[in-house]
Length: 137
Image (cartoon, rainbow, N blue to C red):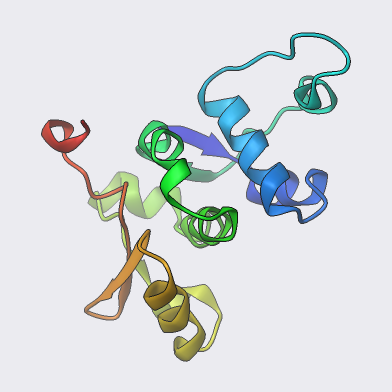
């Protein structure tokens, strides 16, 4: 499980989808910069821990080459809206559309354009979150 601070990651990345993905990959894969010229160097001293969570961030990063940076950022942003307390109490990994604070049409459009998310029973499903331990590979 990865606990992250979405707002801090987004702010430090300057809103760049490429940089957001770089930061998340660095955190998930525990990468360290090779030298001071490495693009990771500027993020190495930052603490990105927070209240947002991903259950299988490793699978998202392992399969990142299949998805656009924009799709990955939308996935991370919507996943960050799920309260960790709800997950710990119920084990539910979906996000009710009304909890996003966005019009349902926009959420549906995101889900239709991306194969990382889907909509079912008025909630956003996250592709790599709903995996059981047997389907991780």
